[in-house]
Amino acid sequence: MTVIAGETAEKLKNDYDAVPIITQFGWQFEWRFFSIEDGPTGVVEIIPLIGGLEQGLFIPSLSIPMGIRSKTGFEIGIGPNISISGFSIVIAVGQTFQAGQLYLPLNFAFVPSKEGARFSLIFGFNTAR
Image (cartoon, rainbow, N blue to C red; front, side, top):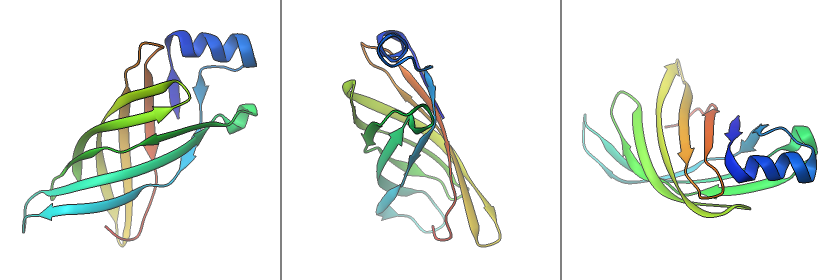
């Protein structure tokens, strides 16, 4: 789920009769670039998303944060973001919870922009870490 603020929210309302709260669907690809035994891991993620489908919209975005993940699953990252609003930066923080062999990441992302900030709450699941 993403909340859109500022000029971008106004454009959604005026041009598309859409509310500035959209769902996002996508995939996270991840590469580790270092790992310390019983310590943190450096990760780079590529996250393509499609938003607004529930309102008949097609709003693509791509984020590429680089960050660090602790042994307990807490992570923080920062990197470029591109969307129909243009280029910006994404700042993300999250926690991965484990239930047996299932991993459940929960992340909060903030994308500041001169056209309006975006705030996203993203969750998912995977079976490998």
